[in-house]
Structures are given as structure tokens and as C-alpha cells.
Length: 200
Ligand SMILES: Cc1cc2nc3c(=O)[nH]c(=O)nc-3n(C[C@H](O)[C@H](O)[C@H](O)COP(=O)(O)O)c2cc1C
Image (cartoon, rainbow, N blue to C red):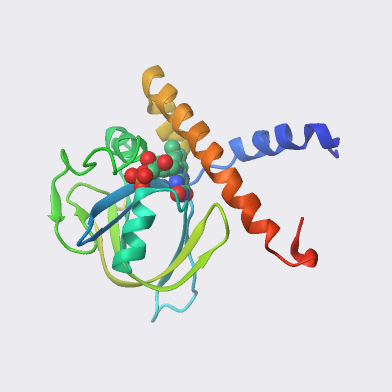
């Protein structure tokens, strides 16, 4: 069944609600500070087992992207299914306004890739390429170190959302709305600069 043009956004939303992805905590540290956020845009980017490579999509208005740009390093963490509070801590607001690591135990809190002591598993990555596409910056990261604390399935975005209380959900909705307001003009400016054949 095809959707009419007016329905396309609603049907897309409905389809994407059926897709559940892992949530990752992306962290980075530099001489300018440390930052972290919750992300679903994290993928394996190579099939070469000798050279593990990850690709992440981070909005350029986020504090964490500023820190990654400065350090050229990031760490990725999967969370256990019980770690809703940790996931919310990194999804809530900006690291420009508060230290998101204040209540976290860290394996290495002062390096270029702060590692959470309590997590499902972690990967340390060095940025090898970077591509800015308006409302997302994509970073390819070569994995240089890794650790695994659990072999159970990690926390999914649907489980995170259903584990949040109504107050937390209100905060996440407000953050998402504010992000879209900031990111839409970035995307429009990026597309306005593209050659005609690349415009939607
Ligand atoms: C389920 C979920 C998935 C998210 N995925 C991403 C993502 O893939 N990339 C991104 O830049 N932000 C993503 N966000 C938003 C950031 O986690 C959030 O805006 C964060 O507070 C930004 O923090 P910072 O400004 O301290 O870096 C996601 C939020 C939620 C709730």
C-alpha cells in the first residue's frame, strides 16, 4: 500500500516505531573538557576483522561533537537493560550546562575517551574520517581497544523509552523538539549549497 504525500511522514514514523536499535553512550574528552550523549546512529563500518571500524552520526550542535572535533577520539558504550538512568543522564540536556559524568564511575575519566565503569561493553576509537552533512557529522572511528562485561543482549531504544517515567519522557520530547528547531536550518543551508542534481 502506497501512502499519499500527506501520509508519508506519519507512515514513516509508524514504520520506524517497529524498528528497535541499541542505544549507545558516546563519550569524548579533550583539554576543553569532556562530553557524552546517547545515540542510536552507531554502526559497524567495515567487514575487515583485522581493522574494526565504526561510523557514528552526531548532530553538530551537540556538545559531544565539539569535543570529538577537538580530540579526534571517542568511546562507544552499550548499556545493560537495567541502565535506564544512565541512558537518560546522557540523553538529557547539554554537557555545556552540566557535567554528565558527575555521578558516573569512570575507568579513565581524564583521557580523550572517558570509559564508564558500569556498562555492557565499550570500544575506544580514533577518528579516521569526518563528513559534515548539515544536521549530522559522521565520524569513522578505528577501534583501538575494547572491553565486554556482559554477553546478555544490550539495552534497546524501545526498552529505554518504555522504562522512562512521564517526567523523563517530557524532557526527552522537549529536547528533541529543540534539537529539530536548531538542526532543520543547518540541513537547509547544507542542501542549498549542493549542486542541483544532488538536491531532493
Ligand atoms: C533514543 C535517543 C537516541 C538519540 N540518538 C542520537 C544520535 O544518534 N545522534 C545524536 O547526535 N543525538 C542523538 N540523541 C540526542 C542526544 O543524546 C541528546 O541531545 C544529548 O543530550 C546531547 O548531549 P550533548 O549536547 O551534551 O552532547 C538521541 C536521543 C535519544 C533519546
